[in-house]
Image 1 (tube, rainbow, N blue to C red):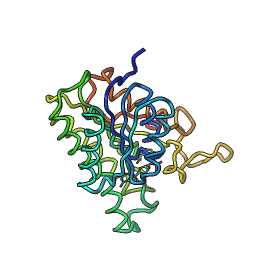
Image 2 (image 1 turned 135 degrees about the horizontal axis):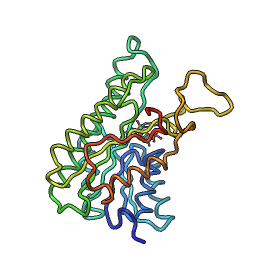
Image 3 (image 1 turned 45 degrees about the horizontal axis):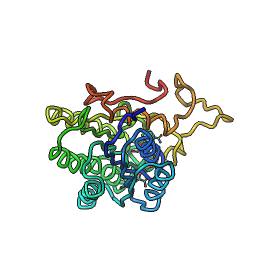
Image 4 (image 1 turned 60 degrees about the horizontal axis):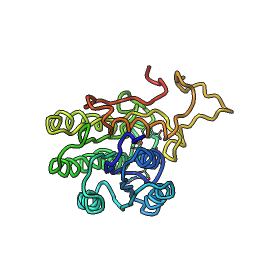
Length: 255
Ligand SMILES: NC(=O)c1ccc[n+]([C@@H]2O[C@H](COP(=O)([O-])OP(=O)(O)OC[C@H]3O[C@@H](n4cnc5c(N)ncnc54)[C@H](O)[C@@H]3O)[C@@H](O)[C@H]2O)c1
């Protein structure tokens, strides 16, 4: 049976770890050729190797998403390697410190916005420029940005992150409106707590029930693969009428 994204070319940022690695693997399992991009070149290369070990096609590239020239080079690398760019997952992100607004260090605020907002902006811009040069594949070109439930409601422990993930939804809806007629669909995924390196400070310890944690309908941490499945569906022709939408993958946390 053909995969959901058979023959497409997918570029994933933050692909060296967590949600990005799971998404890269799922894209490959569903038939895509994959470029795994990360600021840590070793982990991006490991992701490509994991895909190759499963019989998939993948390459890796070093990128700092805050560096405009590096982002352009990442897209050029994808086209040089596989001839085109069909699906992008702008997923690289950082959490920043846990602090209230009054005590939040200015330089940390700038860094969180640089990676989570400017980084997504620069990637989106470079990806759209490439996609506009190509014929749209079945289901259109797709871009999926990783926001968060913190893009929909506040999380007072991480105010800069909350600001940044709200902005990712603004970028998503703006780009979707701008490029829908040209065959580019742009959506966002909004995960709640997913078991990755980033969420360590918040993870649920089943042996230590928290009295402060909001109970989710599905009362456990999410897994990166559960986000990956949604990203790949949003990148496939199966979601051909879905654009400009932040989609929650949160175990019902905001239900
Ligand atoms: N884990 C969660 O609970 C959760 C929940 C909601 C949203 N998210 C979002 O999911 C995305 C992935 O996070 P994760 O949980 O997999 O975390 P992670 O820390 O495991 O992975 C993030 C990856 O991004 C890379 N990265 C960081 N800065 C970069 C930069 N400037 N350029 C390129 N790559 C860079 C890191 O090297 C790392 O490989 C992030 O945008 C995060 O905000 C995570």
